[in-house]
Image (cartoon, helix red, strand yellow):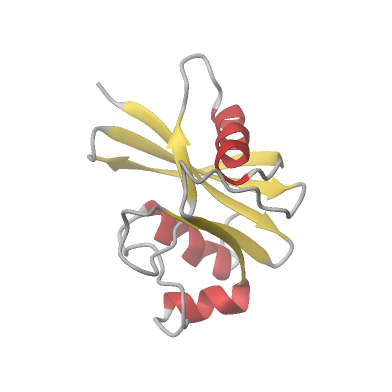
Length: 139
């Protein structure tokens, strides 16, 4: 059995939405992610998960890449989505924090130079998606 998961590169202008789980190492932020419900499309799952976790509405969504994730037995579908609004209304049961990060701030985070944000782990699809967004290689 493999459970489908969406992981979302949600952008608005020059910024990307990242969040952190309370169980993660201090300062670690990543892209939002969540399980796809039975009968749900990837696009609908992206919109639902981002709204449930951060209260941000998402418009256009597209598939980018996938990665098997053995914890517990998932297949992660990396998608890009365009945020329709900016206000974050955090669900504290889902995330400890969520923030909009500019490209410049994310460059610093990926280089280990941001004062507050540590990037997603190398080898994770979140790291791949963010690196390609920074390099303008998502198309």
